[in-house]
Length: 169
Length: 189
Image (tube, rainbow over all chains, first blue to last red; front, side, top):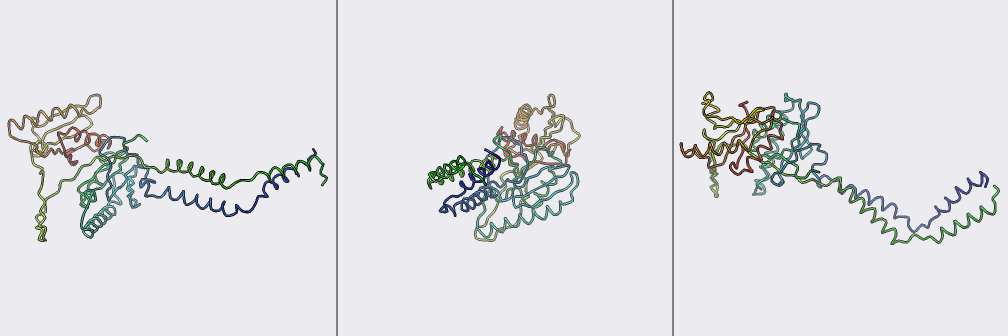
């Protein structure tokens, strides 16, 4: 078969395959739209509130985690301590210094007031509502945690817990 | 364009084959759900939460003298109080030290009221330390009538101790059941 015939055959076969019936027309669009909704639904933050927080807590046993009002991750990146909270606020300061510590203290005080107001309006308070859960990176030392614990105490969070990972995943 | 009869018969054969090949709705639906099942497994693997635990501790609080004037007359009574005889456990990079609050504050210079359990090859000997603490508590109870009924221990790690070790010590102290409440403190070392 000469070259021209080969080229013609190539395109003609594809044209023949593409001539499908039109009754399927809305379905490809629907498949695409549903897939997008499906992907969005599976990756919303409520399913895994820790998505986006890159802390590596230690693998150790502990009592099973309970839901608390305040959760934050604390990690060390290039000699900077970075704190991200469960309402997506970020605080950072250089290790050994405390540039944003006052802003962090103000944030904790505001969260504490919010929890108390919520409890007063509802008329009850769950046991863990006033507890702060800290997901601490393994690279941190106790010295790094001292200002954060002091801030928690100052904001009247008297109960706090350190998060651990129970399964090795 | 010159088309040979062979080529024409190939085109005709392909058209005939394609017109016989009907994609039915059940096949399309099945394929659609198959894709969904695969995507579900993949995306849930990515977004599924791990299992987490908590090692809890607390800050000691001062009792507020405010009186509740409402109908409930709520009054919070302290279950446990910290005293000069509350046990203290200090962790440094060389050893565990234990005593009570008095021995690390007012009687700091006295070497007879505090005890040391050195690390072995750099590894903290917490089990050994706990055994010694239990014996020491028993002696205090028998001799001086000092008991630690609240099960409180004040734990002071040195600043450079990594957090995983601090958390392991807290959890193992509570797991032993001899101490039920661990308070993290600082300022000593």
